Image (cartoon, rainbow over all chains, first blue to last red; front, top):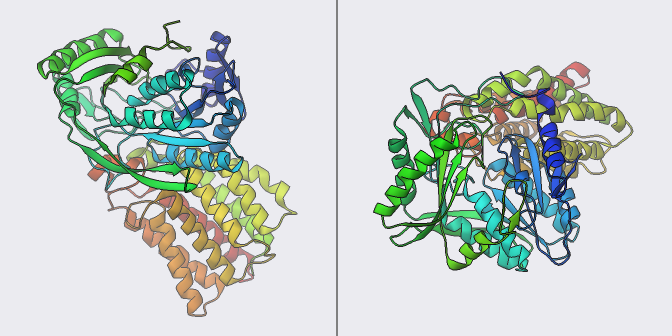
Length: 357
Length: 213
């Protein structure tokens, strides 16, 4: 293992300390339990938005804490969900009297830990809603699996909901908006190489020199199919077709019902993309793939969308949801409406993104 | 009757088993998950082990509850909430008991399992810890029904757990990260099931070595 680390056990903490040192005017770090929060939190009267997940995906989520996006982020160990005590403390720190939305990626660990945190916060009288993101089309059916994973759409939902909170939307409105973003987003990724979790010291899986892993998740977990290395145009074609040819996807997700005061299973459906749709196209690096290659992916993606009559009206290209040093990429397509476009364009100022300010 | 001392010995024995099997559990998880089960469990149970000396004057329920909170706040992943919930429910099942009868142990095992089922939504055959815990509770209940002693009941529970663990090998995972592998999850024992087996085996070890049962 060759990495720029001191000791594996200090990797997460020292990385967070560096991020906060670099952006001390925007964010602060609480340690034990660990969370990163807006330097000016709590914002009275504003709904606060919290996300979190395993570390190793930087800049997600801590890099998106700041004005117009997240109020706090809870980092877990590498590729391991954070714990409810972190979420609860972060919740108390940023609560501004208008409630909290947890944006949670659909992985069993994240889901269960955020559910416990929701129960704990509600037990302390704090109004919390919990919306799951599950946009990874590589997972075909939800009946015999955990269901689709939360990947690229997550940070798009964080941006859009963060802008809405800044504009004064109330908690149910933001939860509905978050759900709507999730129901309009689809993602899929591939890996050219594996990655090494510092505490393990060896690659999570082995890939031959001429092999790629299709439908990779973001935690170094193997994907759905191992296949021979192909050209970037062919790979982009496979990923893009998987997104635009994905049919309606129906599943049940657990959400907190405020009237009943308990968890309920909600049936949700993603409709397929259609000619004329306006899209946000997001080409993401898994960490080790350079931006130059991402642009080759985008080039082909834009050609395919044009041929299909899909209109890319916004784009995002770069390493935003990474898997440590893994080489590979993911593509996310999000169908936009006027409100979502307005919120996407709204001002944001975080360690990773700043526009409109 | 299981005393508070037996419970503390069991938790220490389980923590030791996790430490000894840290690399093995991680290796199992690397095959079908994300290669962190041993690391995460060991992080949590090292904290439990360090905490035990502060719990010597507490009753059984309080000990189990304290362990639950430590696990929930230090393991993370799916194992933290699942083991945390198992111990939390177990603590509720034995509230106000100074010693545990056979029926109490059965109640503890059953409510722990119920908590895991509710939190994780897994069913029998999904290739999870449920496939290990569930047959062991059934075996324990059957032994109690046949008027077997606590030691024998626990032996049968652990044998059933081991059988359940072996049955996870040919299963295709339908919960957790292993489920994304589809058929590629077949042929490996479930990591969470393996740690659950170690938990029950540790309890049996305490009963056997105490010579009281």
